[in-house]
Length: 185
Image 1 (cartoon, rainbow, N blue to C red):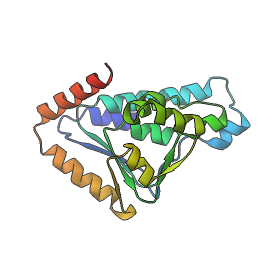
Image 2 (cartoon, rainbow, N blue to C red):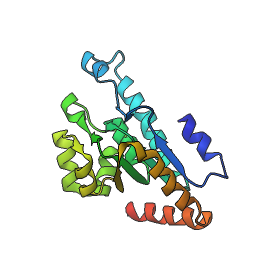
Image 3 (tube, rainbow, N blue to C red):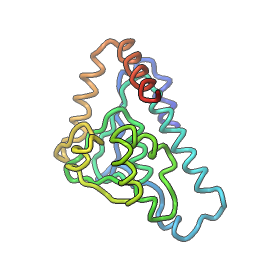
Image 4 (cartoon, rainbow, N blue to C red):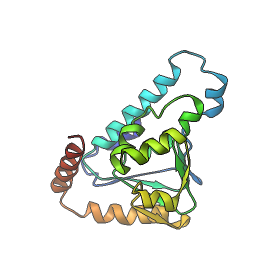
């Protein structure tokens, strides 16, 4: 939340890249915590509210936001990537929304964003089955823009960001807003 807010307050920003450290984009929630039970009844919802808020704020930024998915992205990790405008995925990564197997749902925007991106039927299948898919399938479904070698994910995202950042900022912001509004109609 703080990083997104910091980006929003930088008028010189022309593009933003989100990536993970190491070989994982974002694993999502703490599965062991969920299996053992939450210590407070609404703890799960508070965690999802924070991720939803950050994702919504990210989606509203007037600049292109690129997810450089350098490794697996499951649950909340994939939901964060779905809040980005474009996704570049490592050829060795897998993505999925496994929440159904834990008796919960992708509550941080994943249900709506995935359906808008790949269509209702495919989104329902992935969410109801909890199936993780590989990079080739993610590309085939239209979930990601590109699949690249693991060692080039961030470099590819930087090259894309530089290309987009070279465009007229006002045009970029208005095109992003128009496309986002049209998707919600």
